[in-house]
Length: 433
Picture 1 (cartoon, helix red, strand yellow):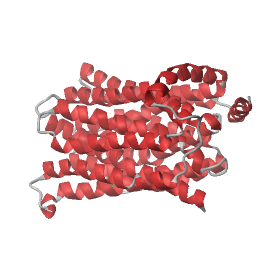
Picture 2 (picture 1 turned 90 degrees about the vertical axis):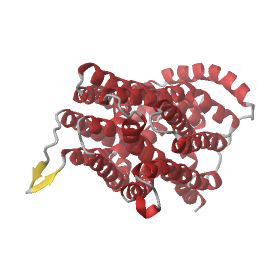
Picture 3 (picture 1 turned 135 degrees about the vertical axis):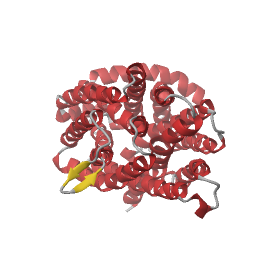
Picture 4 (picture 1 turned 30 degrees about the horizontal axis):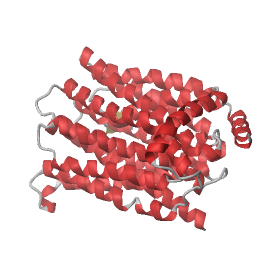
């Protein structure tokens, strides 16, 4: 019973921080950044600015992820460290409320700091999965986290959308003030719903406690050692190479989809509806595919998801604003793409996390998840800048989205060659040795 309570409390952190990824990253920030903070700039110029901001936050986390992972493993302070990064993100998110019109530099600064807090907390959150699950439940627990993330993030986003559409009901002067208030709501939501994890999830035992300075110094040594260990675990090395490629595409589409839609002329209301569709369709599919991953194998479901994303990039690059006519019903092409993304977005992220847990030594979880997050965030550095740069150079944002397909294809081919059974054996031998 205690472990079940811990698993639910662990998953509630996805419910908490998904408010940032939904309402800020995917939702209002790209729209507000283009229309309010970058008012008057060319659409391709604002896309490049956003891409640089996204990539900068990811770069910072990529550089520190292995060090803070080693710090958490050595000092048994995963929960305290998670709280520190979460508070950084919460305060930066709330700070967006105070950024005036036209000040895209300050908005980008708060966004970068918020991204560091959001992504940095995941280094510790992901590693805590070994405290609340076992071999028979890890895929389900991981999928539940993403499912609750979709539901929680979607509910807050829905409330904020109503606030933006009907600001007079909330005593607000207009949609702009409602969007700014949504950033404060996100910060509050993130903080309140982080409490269950902090109170109900057990802190795994670790080595001797040490100061952050000492841990950071030893972390550089640990970083080199961890890399050598990963090189010895060739299955882990191949999986991380595959993950580095395909998660680049996933993260780029998450953070840049709304900006892409704005650039090709999709109406703001349609973009918001599409985001809500992703959240509420993603909720049941994350649960369903999490269970299928447990029964059929996580690797098979991840490969299925990669295939769907390849279709999304091809259709997105050729998309126009004419709706599909399906059985006499006219359906926006952007909605159709949003539905495809919603089917597999959560499962790729959740099952990659749980699949990786089977390949690594359990006593070095935070250290290895530090590398996992580092590669994921290094990958997210490339995609947004690539998409923004190609769009600016060619004047055609469709060419930017098309280039992402290469990442999915290469990542899928590498993942196909990953041998899970061999990876487990190697991890067990390292733990014993």
